[in-house]
Length: 174
Image (cartoon, rainbow, N blue to C red; front, side, top):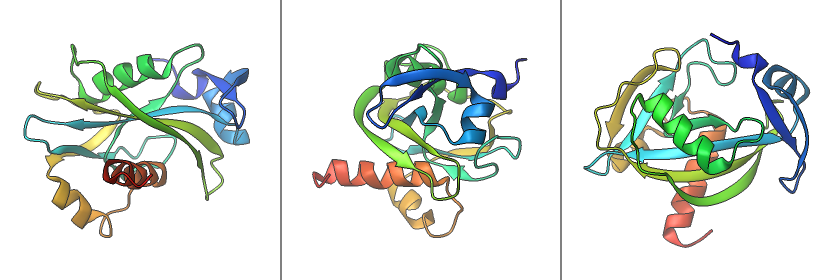
């Protein structure tokens, strides 16, 4: 298995234009802008896939997230990355193409740099088998329970911001 730090990513500017390429480890170490996807997966009952990341993750280990997703590889489109990451992290094949909703520039407050973030949604009716390398715990939770856990659990900061932006987007206020 290839070391995730060696994966090559597109480096982008503040307008999401590609300006170079670098290994993920270098991108993270130098805080270079790159691209990520966030996919909110819901089951047939409308519940949200929520998981706790493994302790081995390069960024935000052992924290909870209400999205699946990850970095966009060099030369990869946001749409292709959203489908790839959703299928990989959920452990399924044949998902419908995730529906793009919006993009935003996330700027980390803790020194991890920033990344252009594309937010998607997808319905997953298949039985999930999350990657044990990526996911330490998971469940499909009703929206109300996710909202109740926001103040209780340690959430990945970029996923938390994407969730808040998605909530406002759905309410029509941004």
